[in-house]
Image 1 (spheres, rainbow, N blue to C red):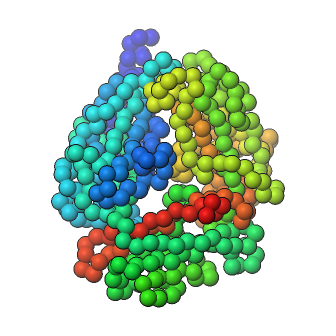
Image 2 (image 1 turned 90 degrees about the horizontal axis):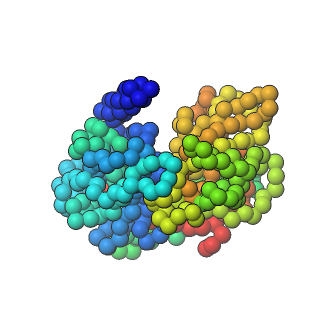
Image 3 (image 1 turned 45 degrees about the vertical axis):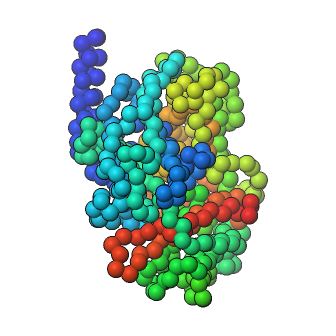
Length: 423
């Protein structure tokens, strides 16, 4: 048995190494190895904030992840400047990095008193070794042994050189049938101290709901141009489904059941069975506090959230009739960057009219929701299981990009976030 287990471990290690060697770079928040979990990236001033830092301001990003294989790995990282639509800017590293082009991650700790052993890695950016020189979109790349072909994970972040201000308002949709369901975002860019010669070419604005990349809308043409102001309030643009408040569960403790947890068990692994969920598309709007998709790593059974929080296999059940169109249901949130993958896809049992899934989570508080992806159109529909209401409390982010005439890259010159309730 020992020889068999040793051989299996060797084969799995070889497969993971080969997988890392063959990975193709994706300009998105992406995990390339299955043992990498709980990726976090936010402005260090506020936990789980949008990863935006001001250029040369002293602000830092806090970036971390867990390696469930444990031990210590030779992880390296580098950053790459990207366009507003997350394509490579194709400029020299000398143009966007002040110091070194890459460095090794040296801050790591081993888990303590947990069933699932892991190593927790931390990184702060900018630092003495790697510092962005210009504003814009950036991709953080983590890889093995200093070889960028052995990708481990990639993470998007933003560097802001604030040159304009952005005013935002939220209104009901101007499309009469959608007024009870949609939230329309109107905004203006005020550029008193910045000369913009051709706003139809030089400026782009991206609007996003709850920092979900799947919702991003790119604005390239202002509705009106006024003195030192660009107005974006076209009748048919920036119309978002209001959605519903996120569902949530609490696994901060493994000694007692908390919010939405029906049962806890501890054996060779920790498991948590959530109370069955039902569809919310036929209900009236109900005000419920949520974190707009965020998650927070917390551990009430120990002292250190990062290294004493254990991993838990969480079981989801959704009572719902499968839609008539062919497709698949997924459970999503910021914990997986709203990405639809085989890992978070639900299995449907037609005889019981139920969807099932199980995912691995680190102890903490989590927001989540169920979405449906149509196989024929590729469109993702949240309203099928969650409903949509204008009253829903959401955060909206607006990113403003500017390319100077003759410049080879886009700058991020404006950013704001508005909450539909706390204005």
